[in-house]
Length: 273
Ligand SMILES: NC(=O)C1=CN([C@@H]2O[C@H](COP(=O)(O)OP(=O)(O)OC[C@H]3O[C@@H](n4cnc5c(N)ncnc54)[C@H](OP(=O)(O)O)[C@@H]3O)[C@@H](O)[C@H]2O)C=CC1
Ligand SMILES: O=C(O)[C@@H]1CCC=N1
Image (cartoon, rainbow, N blue to C red; front, side):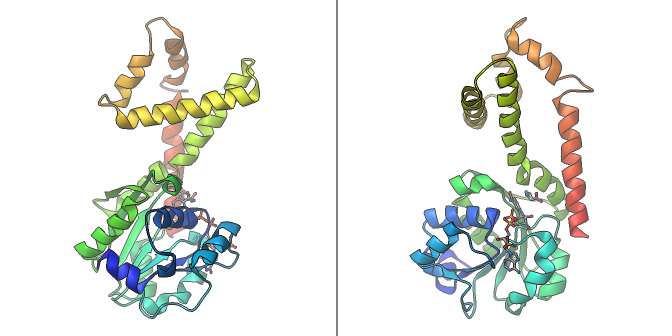
């Protein structure tokens, strides 16, 4: 299956909320023709309605034989939503789920054993082409399916093939949910600056640019993040004073984040049950 097949046969997007629209925005910016996209969503956003004006089929009759059906509804609503597209199960159409927790076996049970299904977890920086998606396919998925999925995903960022589906809940907890942790870091850093007397707008500008700049440097630099941290930390200086608090083995950032990621991983497992 190739990109040309996708353009010709179409992509059905089931659910176009925050994540579905982030992906669609990235794909359309990367050249996916509007006329090749069918979206089902009960309450389309203003953005989605304007994409319909560009030619996206919105809550319209489905194409006869779509190349891909992307499942982007909440895990809790998947059971009610799936019957709308179940008729495409059985072989010809590649299903890609982005739902947290929902397993390949869950989808195979509802779409038919012969259905190629890729389970994936993207993240919202996809909207600006800087996402990362973890993915794994079931036994019906061929190399050409995975390549097509990766080609599509490459227009919204990077992708990583998992070794085993058991890794998916941890991937969800690290990179799927991860942007929220980083946004909260910006909020908390700005609030801490305010607590030291900075005006709110200035504190937010400093915090946002610092996190964005540090992220960019971490991606571009040849040094690893630990060395980049050392590069900021003058012996006996201001950073060392802060890191003494943040790197405390019991109350610091690492044990806190470990608990947060464990909670997200556990929740992913629960959503899959
Ligand atoms: N947000 C994120 O950062 C990430 C989300 N995900 C996964 O992506 C999926 C979607 O999450 P998110 O975009 O945040 O959620 P949203 O609620 O923003 O989007 C889901 C969309 O599906 C619509 N919907 C509800 N029922 C149906 C139905 N029966 N048929 C078609 N569409 C329906 C909803 O409409 P309405 O609002 O009117 O109910 C909504 O627009 C989830 O499974 C989540 O686990 C994965 C990685 C990251
Ligand atoms: O919060 C959630 O459940 C989804 C999955 C990863 C990010 N958002």
